[in-house]
Image 1 (tube, rainbow, N blue to C red):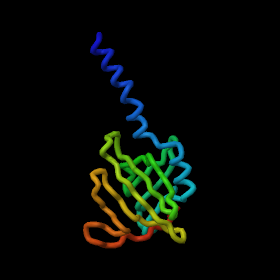
Image 2: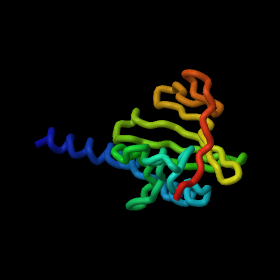
Image 3: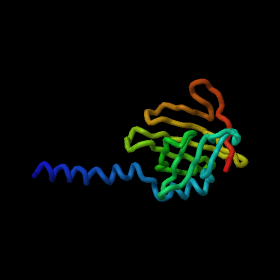
Length: 143
């Protein structure tokens, strides 16, 4: 009986922290909407499927890439003083399964500034792929 009580105490102790990690902060939807990220974005809207979609579902901002199979939930979002959007996207309840992303916006187009993985490594840095130095394209809203 004591073991069961300790288990439920442990669950009640960690559940709020875990739930907070996977739910979006209340201002995430507002920040992302005001910045203008919601919608379908691509470097070439004639391609099907488009590169990225950001939408609000059940009070969360979801990010879909290409095939719509894997969605990430944006759990934090902040607009910087320079107008960039910085957010954290989580792909699962695993606290180590996230990426930090920053976008810049110019004349109705957006592009990655950086994408930092949970281990601290960069996939994109200063608007370029780290692996080969190729600049990422600007994305336009397709719909």
